[in-house]
Image (cartoon, rainbow, N blue to C red):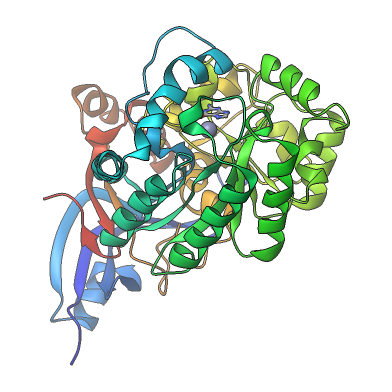
Length: 432
Ligand code: GUN
Ligand code: ZN
């Protein structure tokens, strides 16, 4: 029996490498009347509509012209239990955590609340064009179970983990080194490599983990080298000073993680703003991945991420929303704010590199570029359909656009969920 084939028709854009400059046409393929042949959750072929329509005469055709078909967006850092924290007024990181975030995360001890919020969380991701994300769950095993259960139900390639935190937070939000280790082992056994799920060992940050917990985190990393590791690094000056007090023997902030064996190429380090030269050397040597979170860094007044400085050292930077300190689920809006953060430092983010970054670039940071982040044949059929004229303002501006790059820049500057016409996850449309 042959399985049902679908032919998605539209203007197809897929990156094969990071564009080196605004004229680098060798880094991508753009097919004006293109198509993707999809079956069993995979992309079978990418080509011109004429060729593929002939090749797959029985396929159901869905015509998305004149919209752009692109790989689904990848968000490499956000917090699932913060869907009701986003847009909380007034403070910088540590106060924001204590006043808004920790009290909200306590509620995820309840399985019913976790399941309800997981439904909202995944709806929000796909309505904003995001098909893969790397999320922090709360400290409670229940929150990670709700997260992975909902991801599996929707057949999404999702990475996540329960946070390890055993100090400097309310009672209802603390585990212990032993319970954190046991719960993480159980969750890895249940969800890592099952379907499209993958686990990230998640010590929240140095401030909320004792040395005893850092030790068990190191043991988990050694026992599960194929899992990701995620944490926060050098987001805010008060955070850095408190970390130095708590770990006086560490050479710097990153050394807290490095000295417990957490620092590998599988490690994602949210924020990584205020770095010392030794820390940058260590990131370059280990190939760990800093994560740029522009809307969050501006919202909490944390600082300006030095993208060019780190890239200049051969470091691969990921980019992410950081909901709920981040202010939009949209990776388009994340690029919009990211562009401005770089402008303030006289750095440039051109639209080809920008769209590569939120698709294949983040996939490369995760070592997943053979599975997601492109529209190449043989990869998973996670696809977003983008309308560059979704709003009045966009439509007017598009009347003056002459090149693909101009169109992409309009999308990344003015676009948001209104530009997401459809999101396909493993070939299935997520919008009714
Ligand atoms: N550092 C530790 N936890 C968090 C968090 O939830 N959000 C942000 N932005 N930084 C953190
Ligand atoms: Zn974060």
